[in-house]
Image (cartoon, rainbow, N blue to C red; front, side, top):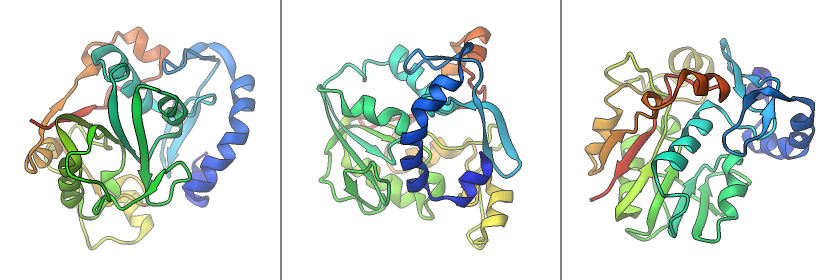
Length: 252
């Protein structure tokens, strides 16, 4: 799996997965793991990761969800009414596992945006978004900011287009043992980036000061701490990670 991630483009992998997904769902059918997003059951999940950072039982073969997707779904479903509310929603870098579900919500005015994803309605740079101020009730922007050299500019753009009273959910890879974000703008070699930041196209590793950075542009930033509300059986059954955080930003 890791060689595919390093060799093929994201767009190509998305298109190929649309063909393979139904076959994988049948082949790996079983009862050991459950994907809470659609309730489907599997005998195993697939190993996933870049380089040497491989995670067993990370990728659901039927939905292509990862630990962070499953954790986010549980948060949205159990801790909020966002999935049921009538909202204007912007989904940046839309995850394939959510795309069809959210696109089918008649009660959402749902738009996707990305620089090059085949799932994007609007081709857009997160640092220069083509939307009016205070346009959206909910913005989903997960595992994006670690790719952006000027993440502060991107955060300001997200704040600008979010309505007052709105919510931004912006998951990022975060080192729970790191107080301060580590980045080195002089590092441009993909191999060195993978060693330092965890992936060839990442430009930093966020620490716990991620929330402070978001607050510096105006957000009220909190960690939802869903991991404290889940049982050990749920962590095993849904193949979740104890390290995954759900940063939720509010605009007052």
